[in-house]
Length: 302
Image 1 (tube, rainbow, N blue to C red):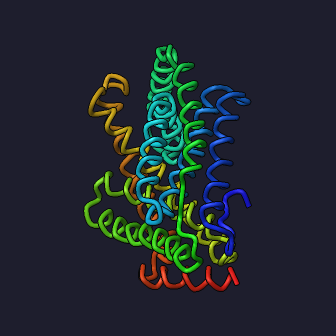
Image 2 (image 1 turned 45 degrees about the vertical axis):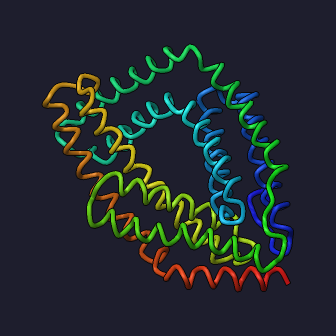
Image 3 (image 1 turned 90 degrees about the vertical axis):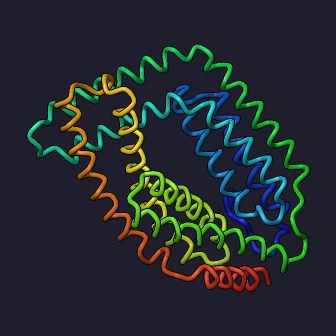
């Protein structure tokens, strides 16, 4: 129950318990680095995302706390993102190579992959201050733990349930809007916005699962699939930004043409897949979604 809000328990206590656990997991991972520094950074950033999802869910009950802690977590994650972002592009090439395995130029993607891996290694070697950044991230997490003592959410059951339902429904409604906008424009920024909303919905489904176990488990599973596909699509958009900004990191004009053709086909396939995955996930009206959560959490708390 480490990432679950238990019905009937004081909301402040539940959120503080969950957040404390996530912060301390991040601190432990960054201290011990059990699978190496870069994997530790990747795992810690996952905890930061879970914390942001938790605080977003209850933001209407403590708006100032949410604003402060969301900014802290966002800024801390950014200080640790450089190598991970470069690694993500290498992983994107690995997925493209599988998807385009039947193409006429398999060696082209392999050559580009080698260049991106070399770029990642150069970026990692250049980060001589990484130890200091990790130490600062640990200190930021410790500050986050201390800040939990100032968290105060509504104590009455009705108001507490209202905070949860409003937070979940707000993000859910924005996910529906983001999907419609992404389909209409095709803009990578709009698909990325949908990714963020789906990821938050995944977190909210996990947090709210005790009130609606079977359905929320299913919703979390579907959102996770959609989030992975959207993450792959975002990596392609970031790769395109690198192609535009620094084509020499990729290859010559012919190689870039091959890469872009594969990226376009893969992105279109991902968008089609995402549409199928989220068709029923985002079907309900946000007001219905909100009222359903309110009713279920009230019933589960009795």
